[in-house]
Length: 205
Image (cartoon, rainbow, N blue to C red):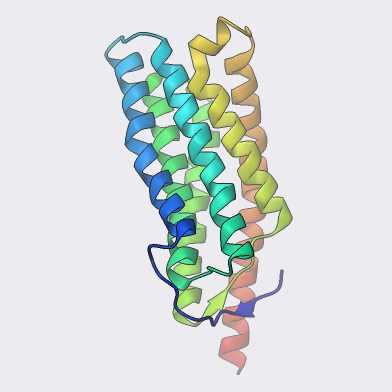
């Protein structure tokens, strides 16, 4: 993994890519609220479909903000900081709510714990390296991990409502969550190794 120095011009925090990122953060209480009302307060199953629809829309904004930032040259330090935070907030909130719901339970809780711990580790590492004006590029494998993770959460959000349409919806989501956890361990180690390599170079300089 290469480590590159990040220097770029300041851009507006109200650019379209950043607005899409704000929308992803705003989607979190809607998704969590729908699952809470349905699972904890015994609400109607259609709320799970609402949660899934909002979650999918939030996932689409994750693609669009990067797309528009590239084609309109609207990359910004603020956007680079906020985008991964929005992703982690969405994933962490959904995993915690699904654990409270009981869909993620037993041994599968370990998969969720691995994912959450990796996100905290990488966030701390990125924060430290950012102070040194160093960025760690996202690898293709990390992007695949994120994709599988989001798909897994989507299946689990559908949960019981999805099982009524396709009986293996929940089990598919749990399987994908485990696959995501395995990828998470590998990519987390990759980031950690890159950070350690940089620290060694700093000490030897």
